[in-house]
Length: 537
Image 1 (cartoon, rainbow, N blue to C red):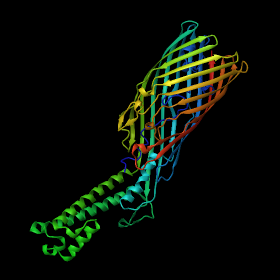
Image 2 (cartoon, rainbow, N blue to C red):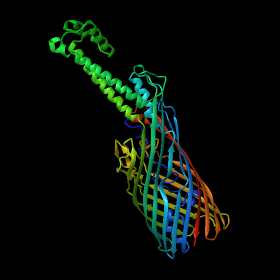
Image 3 (tube, rainbow, N blue to C red):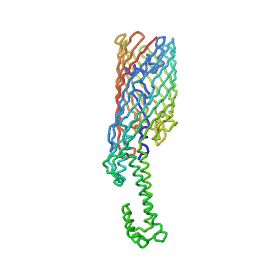
Image 4 (tube, rainbow, N blue to C red):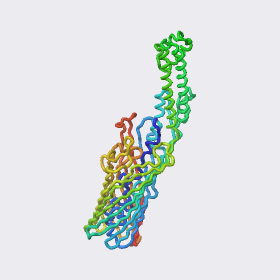
């Protein structure tokens, strides 16, 4: 039986990932939600997507405010035998996902600042736990059955909630070199905040063990049963040891070599001989050819075995006791950002490179019954470097076609994944780097109204080894649409919706040499609504 029942499931957490890499979020404006190909943007959200393009804004001060309301449902199926349920569902709700940008444009220069959830965001809640929770509880009846204690049922109470967010505060400067080329340089300070709360309690089983008056009809708390069973086995161990020790005077008197069947010749009564023979037989031994010395050795070995089983049951009582976790993690890092913009009449090209941020988060633990979050321990939580290239093309005076690609250098970072108890770089659990491709159309109906639509594809490169029921990476297809309304010449309102469809992934655990072999299937669905306002002064 496992030492801790929450340890596997609480070991890592990946939350909202609608657009962007495994760690990055690229859904950083309401304009993106209505048209997810913003990498050549010349609007206010270029402060994030294409900072070198900010030099094309009108001189003056500009501010952009956006918020997204995101819902995500996670579905996990398992074929692990003997579980009470085979389907598990968790929900992620993000009511507040803000993006704020401010730009001051002056001639050939533009200065910008911004704030956004650059990674993670929101909280995930699993009211019925996860397969990795239940698999360990479900194994209790099987282990008891193997030990000769018929058990057919189990139950438990559990809940887990976690949140993870990478908040980015950025500042940058952009310069227009000439009519074609502009450049940008910036820094983003990233603050990481993770939180984990969970419990697993009231583990119940229905053992059939008449020696302790358990009939198999009623449910009993597992720690209570294991504690009582430990005491019973310790008592049996003591009795067996005492029986073996009682033969020492006979052995000291030279009767050790006398066969037990002739024990009356060594000073034993016929009743004592019969009792010893019956006990040995009941314990699986053959007393027919045993000497009295061998009988003593048999009882000593049996006593030791029962004592070991007693200690094992005591450990099981501890393992099935109520467990709770309440821990926070925090850390920070710096991301240098460089960019370039190329402008050619109707064609605009935006290029941006974000350097890797080497980050470690440190535990601040209130309760840790599973020993997973030692207070003060540091865990790798990097943000990988990322390259984006975007193209915007004015097909007509009213129609603009856009495209963009993001490439994430995940394999060179560390996300806190462990193999054989050691933190490893992502190249140990990833075949390829993550990428995404966005396409979009914008059509100006008139001076006030613009409608847009787009498509976003993300492609993960993780190995099966990376995937778990709580932390997994899936490829996606997203459809987006929305509009922009110019309330005045200087105030624009953006509204967008995005539906994200995840590609189901299945992990076969048979290759891991586990018994029993089983598979897990991961899927999700998500929907986002965004509203934003761009204001120029």
